[in-house]
Amino acid sequence: MSQSPFEDRTVLVSHSSRNTREVSLTEEALGRRPNYAQLEDRMVFAARIRPELELRVGVNPLVEAASVLLLHQARLSQAPRHQDLTSLKDNLSRDIKTFEYLAMSRGCDNAEVIAGRYVLCTVLDEAVATTPWGEEGEWSRHSLLSSFHNETYGGEKVFQLIDKLSANPARHLDLLELIYLCLSLGFEGKYRLLPRGTLELEAIRDSLYRQIRQLRGDVKKELSPNWQGISKGRPSLVSRVPLWSLLLMAVLCLAVTYNGFNWVLRSQTNDIATLYSPLAQPAVATNNVKEGSDTP
Picture 1 (cartoon, rainbow, N blue to C red):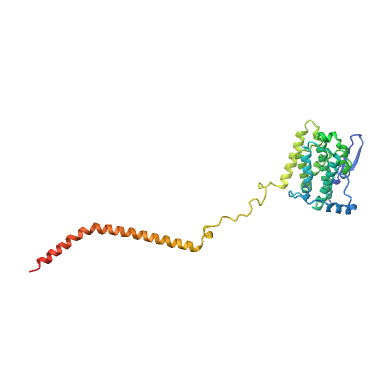
Picture 2 (picture 1 turned 120 degrees about the vertical axis):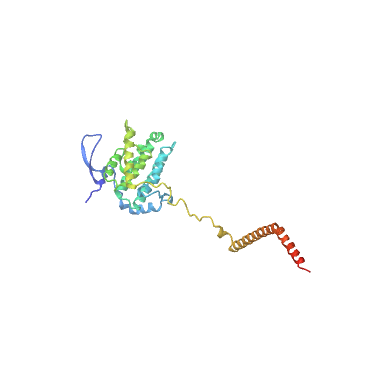
């Protein structure tokens, strides 16, 4: 029986001590699992979800569920200032819970939902903490990662997760695609402070892109399969003109053609008759002379 990569036993070295301990990646990097004992609370929360959060953006259910959070990532890095960090954290926390519900309702694996939540918390924390107003406001005290996973920094474990998922990309394609989108939207993690971090990060992102493209196939060039719409075409001349009008026009054309040819034929006949009329007159005179000579 195959073992989930989220349950692999991984040795992590603490920065504060040289002692090593054997822990589960799920316990250390991905945090605790959702508490299904609070099912009633989850159902109440799901009933309050706004319909506009039910976005359908592609074939990846995990990305569909995280679409609002990805939009937050893109906007937070460009936001000039946010006055109330507590309110911001409450809004982001609510959207993360919405992500969990939507992902589970779409049939996503429980372990991948937890891993996706860990990645999104880390990504959003970095998006806020790297802004001038987020750094001044000490976002680390209000971080999402500390609330959902009891950690303060996940910029290194996200890339450990990438390495584990890349061992079986076909099985974890949805989660890899979510991480790729986070990298494309500006997440850097531990590579933000490294001298050649930008180049190394670009190599990781390119590797993810190649894996995803190999499994997903080439993207269709059309933005939508139904972009052409329904074409009724231009109505034909026969459908716009009554049949009796066409018959009348045909009869008129035949009559005009017949009269034209008849007039030309009469004109040519008269010309020929006029041309040969002098030749017929001497013959008549000769006959008259012969008849006179025969008379005694």
